Length: 246
Length: 320
Image (cartoon, rainbow over all chains, first blue to last red; front, side, top):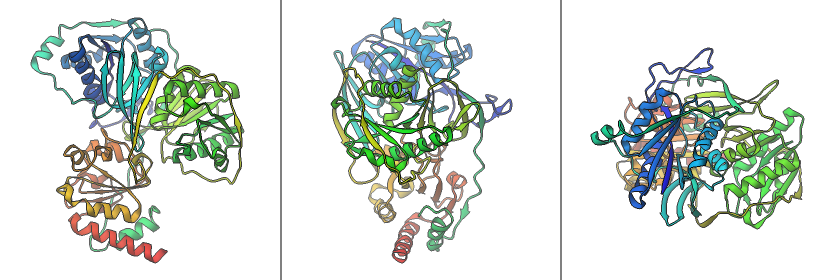
């Protein structure tokens, strides 16, 4: 089983979000970066479990500059066998998907895994783009997945329920809570990760069709109105007359 | 032309479909262009989309579209876009829309914005805004390709009836064979699904145990809200996992979110901070959730929640 896991580097959930250069650039000053949680907790761990069960290899791929190597080594410490970094600035979802597709096309992976979205741009786009480039079925928001022979059985979240799907490999899948349990790298994993192969490849020619022009922070929320717990009629009145939600 | 993919399940339109058509109608007006909707599979009352601004509804009725397969749906939508010469394509940012947007971007060589929160600004450039960093910032995107793709965040625009009518026309598009089989669709009976709910009553560890949920359900029933819960509650199996809202659970943006006995950890806020109005009930005055709230009540929830339910019943009786 040849497995690929796409990983992204994102600011930690608790990071202060700020922008520079006239609000055109994310301010990375003092930001703690992490492996995108859905990529690391669900996509990577489920890929490792399938490898443990069925044999094969797990490759991780990232599009980014050399400063991403520390994050990539974390993925190797959790258990991936080898890594590929495409040496380019991840400008947009389409750009990232195209770069990964150019690498993955020749490799014939059985399953390509991604997290359900990144916690920075929240678009959930790269998986669907990659599936189209690689001409595979795409199952998003998977919460369970088993593979037998060349068939995968997958449960996915839909609005107000779950869908159970059978699909032939190769396929692309995005992973949500339920797929696997988070693994914390141990000391042995961290030591071994230093010696695992991390190949750096140059980017392919690619156009950008949708790019961020400016950012802004949401308007400060006006401070909370604290109400008398004895007077719930007042809360109902405010929700009806002021907030107009009842 | 602005083409809207109007999602339906079992022949019925979702609320998100009416939102998308309403949004598309306004985009078409701004561009001085026609607004048409596309339905796939059996959507019984396709003509009702006219009431939200579609002047024409195209329908691809192929039986293979009864189940969702992103590859087959992408071929259908892309085929319609090419046949009709659409320049703006609008989807819902739903589980279906998220599986399609990226595929269509590649197939149509089109720039996309996933989860738009407002109408585009159309001038020399085509600009679309969306929330980023889990609701902590807004980004404005410029789409530079001839075909523009947008998926619309749920509950970002209210569907508006125009009183219009639409003619329904069949469309033929060549479709590939599906490579997936849908074995089973399990739906949760009863309430409105969380991503579509306008009113949500959510509770956390402050409830102390699953046996205490009756007061939460009573409040939710009284206002017609969907119930939700925090991560520790779902992880302890006090409530089913599909009720878990927050970063790892479902992200929602209802009109009203009532948080009861939830402290408001940053991971929880990331999933609910786009709610229009937030009410927080917590006995700890230092609970971080109060900082994100519009209205706060610092008291024992076991006293306050039944009293709030009674106050709403009284209000409803007086207003009916």
